[in-house]
Length: 200
Image 1: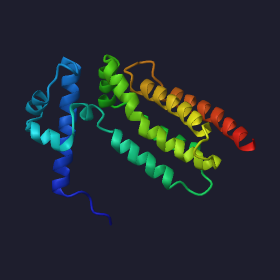
Image 2: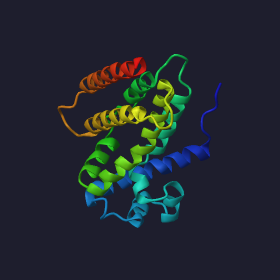
Image 3: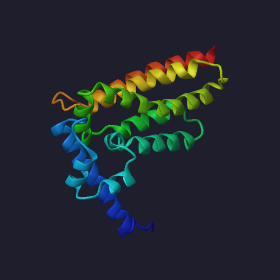
């Protein structure tokens, strides 16, 4: 049997979760710019130094899951079974990221009120897009100067960002079934485009 995390690891995870929770609550209450690391530390009952041992910056607290998301996507693409395409992997990956938890909804509201944070969110999607570009290039056996993988990846990431925003938005009209239908439509469209590119 696989051993679970030890006491030290559980305590570290609990501290990290607490920092994220209180930071999001303060950002929502006082605004992102109006909240300091010292205030987050006080609310989380830790020192500012402890916060920086978990997060390099205040912005990294807000985008707390981006590194993990990038690692999961890289692993999913590199470990895909033989015969599986990039789109096959991304379908499962995107569906797996759909969530309606309170933290994601709060983050959506915080980011939507701040143009700077919206730019930061787009910038943090760039490493994900590079992973997708490399994987699609492999599917198409494309050379380094071929722009086709970049075009397909840009369309995919735009769709992923749109579905993610809709998923996080605190709307009563949200429907996960609708989000899944949008994903399927986009992937079907791109599969047809990729097949045409292969045939050319």
